[in-house]
Length: 220
Ligand code: DX5
Ligand code: ZN
Image (cartoon, rainbow, N blue to C red; front, side, top):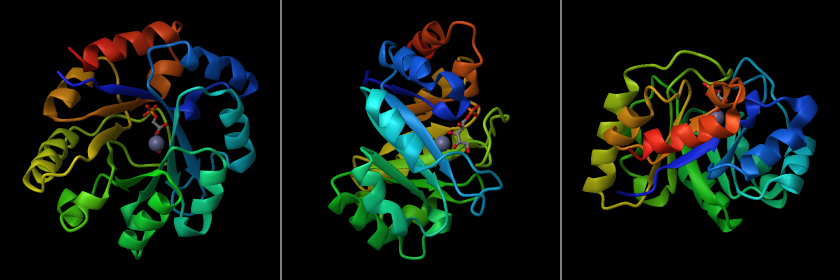
């Protein structure tokens, strides 16, 4: 069975002890760091920006998976590349010229991701799926950690997996929001490749062990 990846979301980390939490992830079975950038316009919340990403990059030893919840992300593609992002994911709902945006991300040497809000049908990616390295399916409404997982996500994963297979694409499916050890196995069975988990990891008393449990559940 393919290796399913775990990406802890630093949105739920203790920012007063950010280096400690980053090192915990470095030393865990996690595969990627998931980094949520919010602008208070595309989503009703503001998280953190460039100086924090710079600090994260200084200590993190794994792939930086950056999720931009911002309007007009084209303005910052170069900036995020320079800050050490490996994957850059933009929202379908925030891009007028998605094809151009994806090409611009790749031109900076990053993997290009497209995120879909819970209400957005996966069919909108039919004509572009072969250009996309990662599709991030939001399994909560973007903007906040700690929300309840939306059950319809399983159907979306299956539909997206079918589209990827039909188009002979190699796109990874990433799930974001409300992921825990209860749903991890069902998500990967449905076709997910990467599971993001924020509050489930960082609110745990033993976060490193929780990452290990998630990894085991995802690959079960
Ligand atoms: C929400 C963010 C998520 C968030 C997930 O807008 O995109 O990455 O950190 O948090 P949990 O795992 O707590 O739902
Ligand atoms: Zn995210």
